[in-house]
Image 1 (cartoon, rainbow, N blue to C red):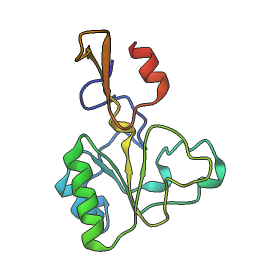
Image 2 (cartoon, rainbow, N blue to C red; image 1 turned 180 degrees about the horizontal axis):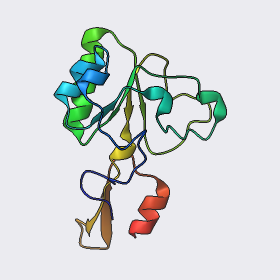
Image 3 (cartoon, rainbow, N blue to C red; image 1 turned 30 degrees about the horizontal axis):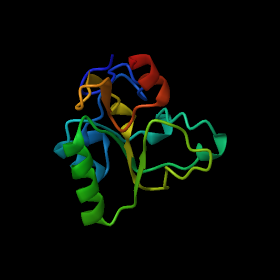
Length: 142
């Protein structure tokens, strides 16, 4: 099962954490405000869209958040700087709807934790899961 912060083996563009020195503003500012990874070398980032036509659509930078506070910081920065915002959950986008050119892109696949707990009505099991989880992960958790 994934940890509360998601799966640390999730694909990265490289093994190193991107720092503000490798990013142009305002992505450098975002890197200073979040606990998650900010990737500025977007040409090498593993988007894994499932559709080659999306491959040339590149954001300014990608945030892999570790929690809601990172997502909130990215949304606030994008709004303050008038930067387009795009985001991706766990799946694919055959029509490229989850990516915008020159955007601040939030890749929610890092938020893939799954927790099982007794149902509140006492009958069965309930599941809580992160925004980046996919159906296969939910089925595996059961």
